[in-house]
Amino acid sequence: MVALGTETAGLFSNDDELANKLLESGKNTFEPLWRLPIFQEHHEAIKSTSADLNNKANKPYGGSSNAAAFLEKFIEKETKWAHLDICGPALKGSSKPPSIAFGNGFGT
Image 1 (cartoon, rainbow, N blue to C red):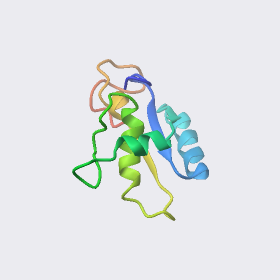
Image 2: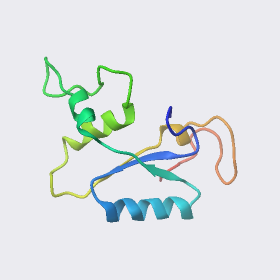
Image 3: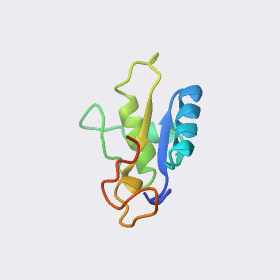
Image 4: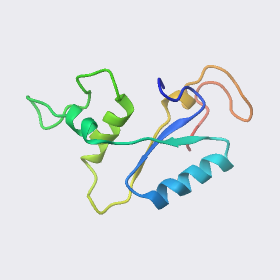
């Protein structure tokens, strides 16, 4: 939410074709997406000294990318996947047609 606000959802994917299809779909349904990265720093941020992984990074930065890095650890390498970070748009507190405030079904 910090980076993209309440109108646009973050998109993470390991596959360009899948990501592009989702970006196009977002345009067609008034649900804009912006592709965000998962860099090595995000994988480093979820390392833990007391567990296999830490689902909350030890720094307050890159939260969405850290969360996507965490999810990526549970997906088989050859599987094409995407994650939509819909928190901002799904919980926005004001209506802007064609969507409504709170619980608007963004991304479904």
